[in-house]
Image 1 (cartoon, rainbow, N blue to C red):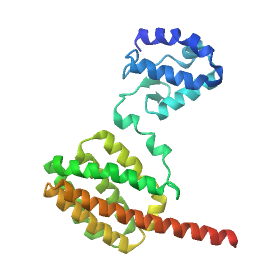
Image 2 (spheres, rainbow, N blue to C red):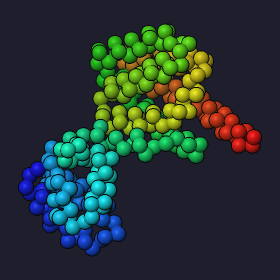
Image 3 (cartoon, one colour):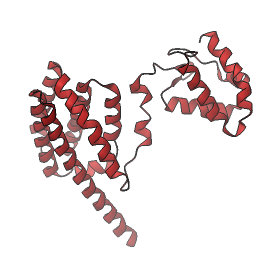
Length: 255
């Protein structure tokens, strides 16, 4: 790691001593500030644990808590036996925690699908404008593959995941892609039950065909309308599956 990064960590040690109640949080903030100001750059190796403990005058548990938080945030990459390095700091890495912090519940289901509409409708509009020839071929190939999984819920779930990921990639915006990925993954356990329905697979297949047709036609608004209808169907079946699960749990509890 560049020497200047180590020196700056030593400078802020005094400030950390005045906030022992939130030492780990203070370390996280300090590291983020060093990165923001350019004192630490992608690829820099942090000092060893022993050096950081001396530099920052903190305990080993507090240091490890801070490093674990920075790792979850995608800011550092801890390598077994090789120390901790500042990551490439790309949006894909920094938005990774979204997948851990989001979970679907009855109380936030409406907010979740509202967020999906805001993000995914813009994604599909961008895809209709920016999709490459390879993107279009892949999407058309996935639509054709739907014929083989009409009676295969597992196959459908795999194909559905690939389809939505390809839409996001075709939009060409890595931040939207990551946000979409995190929201898609919310409540997959409930979606798994919903996709046992062959009627749902048939409906989703028809939705996907309409979405791809609009993208191939380079029609952003028609693509957004088709995806909006698809998200309506997903929300309806998710709500139904959630109610069925709650009902089953209630009956089991009474018994």
